Length: 386
Ligand SMILES: *Cc1c(COP(=O)(O)O)cnc(C)c1O
Image (cartoon, rainbow, N blue to C red; front, side, top):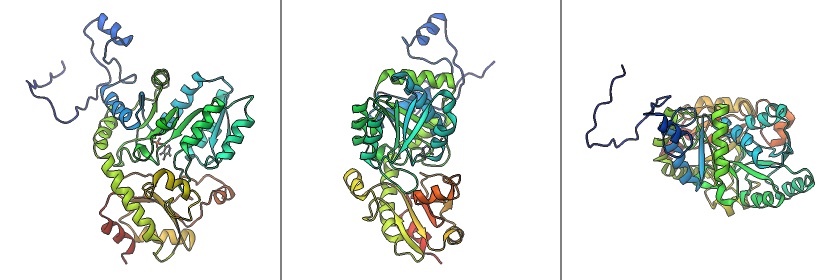
């Protein structure tokens, strides 16, 4: 016999209830029928749907002005679900066009995992609009089903003009998937700019506390949402109730955290260039960044909370820096409330050849920072302390 819930009387909990059940008890066959067909609201089995996911999805709909969102177990599951679902809305050429600077695991997904399913990928520099147009044009008699881009790329923060790319996609009948993880809906809402699918890794800024893995796909078209839900159930991509519940709490401070961490990053980008041993700072608000003009147009003076800098002395200099600045933890993720550092050459871009790394501008002295919400003086103190 299960213990019965304590009666609440007329009182409602203020905090969002955490509902970890894997299955729901139904009163009768009529209820089963109505819920299964979608005529009545309700839940049956947590892999298909559960209340904490639905609550999180409605928050993400609000943030992205979306018609529908699915929450998945992590960002990669969300990207995979989008690719699979997108195939139901095209001409079946099996061709994908993708940015040549995508998140490493996404590139591996495209180059190693989806090939057995009859899909081939072509890569293009999506910061270069003319190159995107040329690639789409050349494929006109066998068009790409999907173009995959990132709003802001890792680690050197190269930008893509989502709206301009979306217009090109519409012209050539190609769907557009935007991985918006580095920008987050605080900086960019790709669906409003014409994208068909927007993916977020909630593991990063949206989660904000390094305590969950979760991903999401948001769309403007309800047929795509229905197909995504089916893909999630059958392939098993659903996110668990506990991380969904934690994310709901994270979202209550999302805008505050983004505002503060981006303000910190803009100040740090300026101050870091005065630090001894720093030879270059990569931040789109700085005039020497290759996408500076686009950055000003899209994000004004505030192009996000991520930045990179280069240390004179390569790997050894980075080692010394990490040992000295212990308050800034070295960990290969981003988006935490605390500032963290990462080393692209040894983590995200480890498996590239030396030449390919060099071609992307990822040197042995390159450090990536995910800037947090610390009071600025405290943050700067971590860099200047002897
Ligand atoms: C982390 C990340 C992902 C993958 O998300 P997970 O939640 O780790 O699966 C995808 N894209 C980008 C840009 C990321 O930073």
